[in-house]
Each structure stands twice: as C-alpha cells, then as structure tokens.
Length: 362
Image (cartoon, rainbow, N blue to C red; front, side):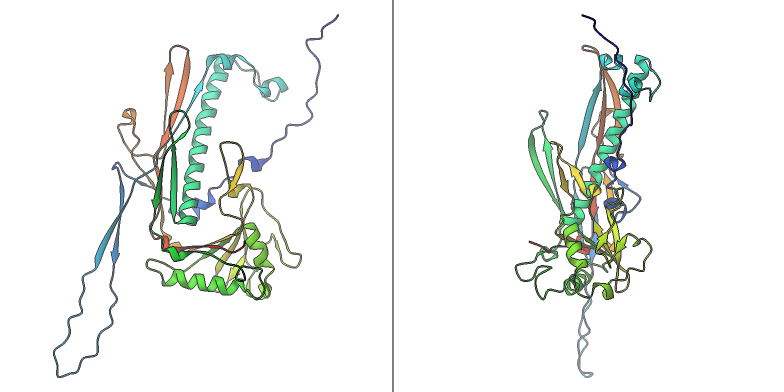
C-alpha cells in the first residue's frame, strides 16, 4: 500500500483579528498621572491636609473678640503595594520543531538557536503585556469600587491569601437604584440622577467637579432612549461621529472600548464603554466585564490617580523599585532557560470621593 508522506496543501488565508489584542489602557491613561512614583519602602504614604472652614461669629462691639483660629490637621494614609511574579521556561527540545509560520512559508526557515532566541523575546513581551494589563485592571477597580481586592496564589496555583486595599471612598458614593427608581422605569429621569450624583461628588470631602460619566452598554442604551436626550446631550463634539441618535445605533470601535456619546452641561463628557477592551480574561479563558453593563461611573480629575511601584524583592536587583524587573537564569538538568518577570504595582486614587458608582438597572 503506497503511503504519501508529503501531501500538497494550499494556504488560503491567515486569520487574525486585531481586537484579539485590544488594549485596556484607557482605564489607566484617562485618570492617572503619566509619571509613576517609585518607593523602596514597605508602604507608600500620602499626606492629606484637613482644612477647617469656620464662619466668623457675630460679636457685639463692646465685648471681647472670640478666638476662632484652628490649626490645619494632617492625615497620613499608607498603602502596601501588591506583588506579581510570572515565570516561563524555554526548553531546547521545543526549538527543534518548525514554527507554523515556517511551514506555511510566511516566515523564513530558522535554525534551532534562532527559534530558541525568538521564544525568549516572545515570552518576555508576553510577560510585560500581561503585567501591564494587571496594572490597568487594578486601576479600573480602584476607580470603580473605591477599593481593590488582591487574591494571592501559592506555589501550586491555589488561592492562599486575600488582601483588600480600601482607599476610603465614602459609602454614599456607591448606590444601587431600587424598583421604581431604576433607569427605564416609568417617570425616572436619568439626567436628574446624574445631576444629583455630580452634586454629591462636588460637595464631598476631597471631591471635585465631575468631568466624565462612563456607562456600561445596557445603561448607555437606556440613557440614550430617555426623553429629551437629543436636547440635553450635545453630540456636536469631535469624536461622536460614531453616534447615530436618529437611528439609535452606536458604532463600536473594536480597538477602543470608550465611545464618546456627547457632552452634558458645561462639557461633562458622556461615554459608553463596551466590547473586548472592557473585559479581562479569567484563568479558564472566559471574560468578565470591567465596568458592568448596568453600571454608571462618574469621575472627576481631582481623583489624582497615581501609579506607584514598590521594591522588587530580588537580590539580583538589590531590592530597588521599578515597574517591571525581568531576568533569565538557566537550569542544568533538565536543561531549560527560565524567564522571570516581577512587579510590585499599586494604583492609588488619592481622592476616592472624586468618583461615584451607580448600579442603575436590575
């Protein structure tokens, strides 16, 4: 019986969707300072000044004056950075096999050493991309929840310790609308809710003027259907070309989860956030939304987001602070080259009361 070892095949197309690598960086770049803060101490501290605002009392002219001076108080808040370590091995045997790109002719034939070196580069880039996505996820959770829960894993990959970093947002800055008051219910005006929440942020201790209202996909749909939206929402803004109010259609850019719907009042930007860039991937391959589809987040620039980094706990780096420290080391038997990347990130929202989260749908 003849055996055909080499059967001719023709490659029609290489399928790749750019949105497979869509960035979630907007959560960090929109509300966090571009410069980072590095600390080699175990905890990172922020000092807040509590200023008093007394009003002068009425005093008759023929009686002594009343003392009113109060020294400004100071409050020091401390946060301990999180820690992440990712490690992968490049094994010599894996470099002996041709890559799919070589088999299809998309890539030139490589030597085993070239494949080995290429794998080192790929893993290093993969590590950095994954760690940066972790920063972005942490930044988003800090803004949305006013706190951040860190679930550490042990050496077998099982949960071992859970730590919650509470930035101290006022509990009243997180609301869940009940039956009869949810968006879409009869007589409910989303604009009145937004105005009330903007006022709450403005009047809060260390609050601020809201500049951005960010809505999940379902919340944005109900908002756009609210009576009077065409009059109250100014869509004559650069970046709103994708919004079609007359048809009720919003064209989502697959590479950008943030779609500008328009502005309210004195330039408060209204965003719809949806798509793959509003998700993170779980260990089992499923995806979870960063901002829930039924949620609305209000943010003021006064939030003062700062990306901080603690010391790398590695003697090879002398316990210095940096964003990512990557090193390689070889194992003799069985032979392998390990790539280890470490980071001690801590996104800090200095003024958490400059954010407000509302769950507007059931």
